Amino acid sequence: MLYIKCPHCGWRSQNEFSYGGDATVKRPKLGKEVTDQEWDDFVYNRKSLRGKHWELWQHLSGCRQWIKVERDTATHEIFKTLKASEEIS
Amino acid sequence: MQKYSIFSLIKNAISNHKNWDLAWKDPSPKKEYDVVIIGGGGHGLATAYYLAKEHNITNVAIIEKGWIGGGNVGRNTTIIRSNYMHDDNALFSEFGMDLWRRMSQDLNYNVMFSPRGIINLAHSDAQMNVYARRGNSMRLNGIDAVLLNRDQVREIIPMADFSENVRFPIFGGLMQPSAGTARHDAVAWGYARQADSMGVDIIQNCEVTGFDVVGGKIKGVRTSRGDIKVKKIGLCVAGSTNILAEKLNMKLPIETHLLQACVSEPVKPVLDRVVTFGAGHFYISQSDKGEMVMGGDLDGYNSYAQRGNLPTLQHVLTEGIAMMPFLSKLKMLRTWGGIMDMSMDGSPIIDKTHIEGLYLNCGWCYGGFKATPASGWTFAHTIAQDRVHELNAGYNLNRFNTGYLLDEKGLGTKTWIS
Image 1 (cartoon, rainbow over the protein chains, first blue to last red):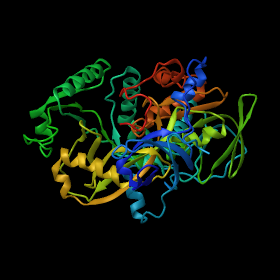
Image 2 (image 1 turned 180 degrees about the horizontal axis):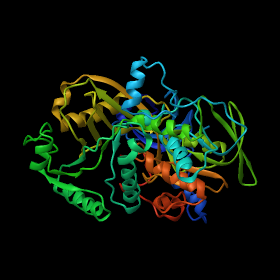
Image 3 (image 1 turned 120 degrees about the vertical axis):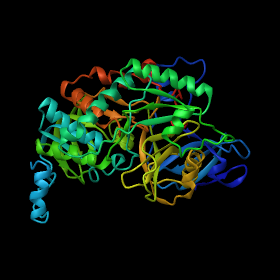
Image 4 (image 1 turned 180 degrees about the vertical axis):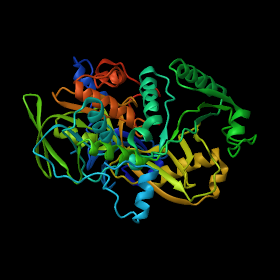
């Protein structure tokens, strides 16, 4: 069982959260000319890192906010959580 | 190589089984090979076997970080089927079914293929319509499919919950009678033994640390047991695909996720089919030892852990009990997890890459085991001929660029949603 510290609500079990994938993927800027490769990288291609991984989770059965979580994908250790609006340092 | 038969069994029984030949050797890597296959799982071993058998390429090494058959080929729920709707998936899988039927004789190794049939249960009229459509598509592609109504399903699996007031009543199901199961480890060992006998080097405890790529061409592979010169490399590493792709500066439409399976304590024969729950994601069969073999959803977040988390297991088994209430009486014997190479459209990739001499075999999601022979066969063809076979033409890497996705389930790009 994962325990995730929601930046809004505090420590909660993973049962309250749903997963949203890699948090470092950025949508190409609106109105900008986008190459096929840039679009593929946004929609499909993932690094899927082994080790520290920044990812999105939604506190679905809680405050319903999206948050960012830094988790080790091999050990499941969670290092840090941020609000969705906060930048990954 | 010693042929396995009733006579060799008797002969070795007389000498107390002390004189069996080793099933495969344990060589050190040579300096140079024609082809190196990375990954000694089912797909890698099968690829090496078909390279030798179909294409007469025997100066081949299989490089495995751990031991052969220690990954997903040793961790799956052994289901073999070809009940797909899309042509590319259906024809590829049905080609594989043919190889499965002949495999024990072909490999001189009993893989215990048991074509007991698979039933996908339907729990609404709408789902019956969808299954009718899929069944028709299958039959058009020459695959056996039978649409069963509620009473017909009840006759085959009377232990399922047919009471009136259940949340997901059984309306019927789609059955592929020729689907089934096989002894998963035997598949890996059978391919390994035959590949070895034809001259393939199976090199275990050998980790790939890097690649030599010069001018867009593969020149060699660096390993923990020395550098190897090679012009063609086949990558068959399932959940570790992204780790090796990073060493090649490649970004792939793959995420690595954890899938769990479990077995109950052994009980007397009760279930002689493979059955899947249609209102969620749960599948079950009974092994020859009597254990109920069960599996279901991904854990739902990127993972390389090879061990599962309890909430998912609880969720999956809740579905199982909803479908077959007697399961609640059974004790769980073992649970385990394996890491899946989840592709972004749910279909695999067997293709060449932009690097000359590098071939890619990945993205098997939930369905890698059943694809073992067809994957090995087509991947061997792709490597040997340096072009894809028509059977794996739909499994190209380029489809994520062109938009011709093979989305059998129509789920889109969120691999963790099932």
